[in-house]
Image 1 (cartoon, one colour):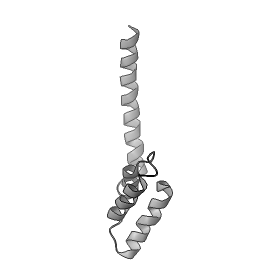
Image 2 (image 1 turned 180 degrees about the horizontal axis):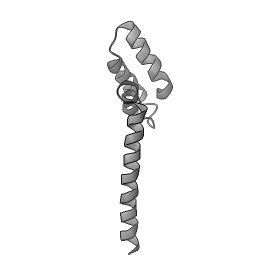
Image 3 (image 1 turned 30 degrees about the vertical axis):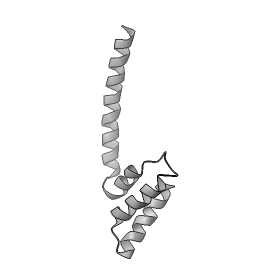
Image 4 (image 1 turned 135 degrees about the horizontal axis):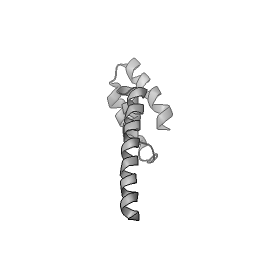
Length: 79
């Protein structure tokens, strides 16, 4: 629900003269009560601040870090 509605809400805010970030945060906080599995903060951040390349770069870095941590934990567990 948030992923499909937040772009519409922010476009409405821009055309109506409201601050899109404030309206987007209000929208996600209200929707969080019924959509607990979605990250409203991430959706607003993607729409307002991040580029797809930024998320891909950070995701790749965190994947490598997670792999190394899991590799270390498996090695310690099986020794």
